[in-house]
Image (cartoon, rainbow, N blue to C red; front, side, top):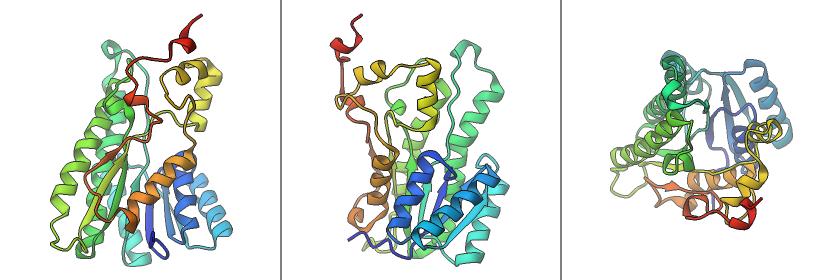
Length: 266
């Protein structure tokens, strides 16, 4: 039993893409959703769509996760509206492609600010709001955290940091003897997901579907819904004894040592 009905779930980066799929999956379980995103108009539109479709309460929040004051304010609004928080999903993230010898400081800071600093301080504020009653946090990492891609050094660094953060918070916040009031902290490390961002890359010729299939035992990308299913599991009572784990939902990408040669031949 998932036991997610009437839970308060805060999801960053949820106006569209993977975050929106997360919001839909939790709403389908009867959870009330706080959709937080930097895109003010889009997050309001998305919150209304989910409320209308699933009949749950939603709360749109404009949030730049690289700003600590903005994070504090957002969680204060959740406390004022709902009085508690049960689940946090840190889904906001960006990646910037640039050779490491040329990567400018401002872009480095932007990637780390959103992907790692934002994740840490959202976890911090969620931990404070969850308090002694406990809850669940799901961070979004990446297969790049252990299998980096050239030209994305800050992204790989940030996601490796998310893995470490996940483990240290699980150790720090899992002290309750019976596990009833612990804050469980886990992460999902996806591989290639068929989001608009990746599909745009295909259309622009940055990467080809053949190249992706060559490094995947499944020979296909994940759907956003498949990754959202993992988040629901980790946040649910079905994962009540799971904490401090990084779950690689990547279709076997990080397990494959050699690409499928038949797919990379000319």
